[in-house]
Image (cartoon, rainbow, N blue to C red; front, side, top):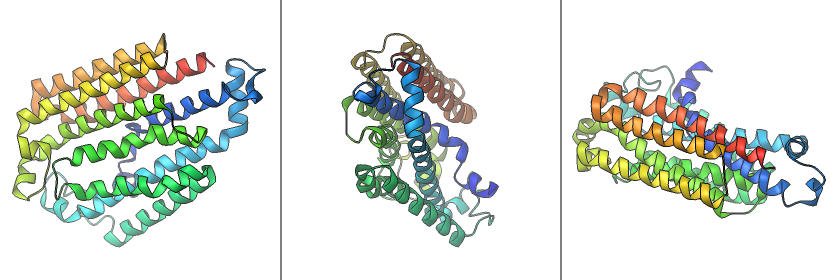
Length: 302
């Protein structure tokens, strides 16, 4: 089991999962403030009643997040295994190093795809009908480096489906506020994936792989990443105003913004020497702290 957790970099789930939880709790807020069942309850009482009735739904959403990401990451490792063998940075990964065979990786992918689709069936019809689209987006990303430098944006789209997907699981319909969080995730993920791709610029050029750093060069790529992160900040600001958030949300917002600035400062000052800190640590902390603040305020306003 440990080798498969390493294959899919399970620790990186913290990037999208906190925003999926925001989507889930936004859905909970929409349901508990509109249905007559909750009319006689206030605050934390609504929260408790909701989870008594829909605790299984919460587990289903978590299972969807885990299985979708497992399938996407394992497929990425499977498709890129030949390139990973040639790249000194990635040659130690599980498939090129022989820890996991390509056949076993495919079996793992298949199991997670089936679990994901089956779980959406038990959530609601709209999630079930949209599940092939979700799978298409998150799986096709792994192929995009072969033909377009926009691959980072495709990854952004895949992870951006997390907040609106979790909201749909609860509410069963689209609303503007969770879509704003999805747009924020799109810009945020696209931006930090460009930063991560800086370290493979030369390898990508030599192997005819496409990325923004290999196409535009590192200097322009950094500016594109900054512009995308400015888009993420703008979306979160608009979400805060549109959603009438008044207190804890804005603490999380400013922490998130500061960590994005810190991420770009690290790259500006240290280059690729601090790539792990800039990519993994700051983004993980940013997403967790921001989600905690947003969810806290949602519960406060039940």
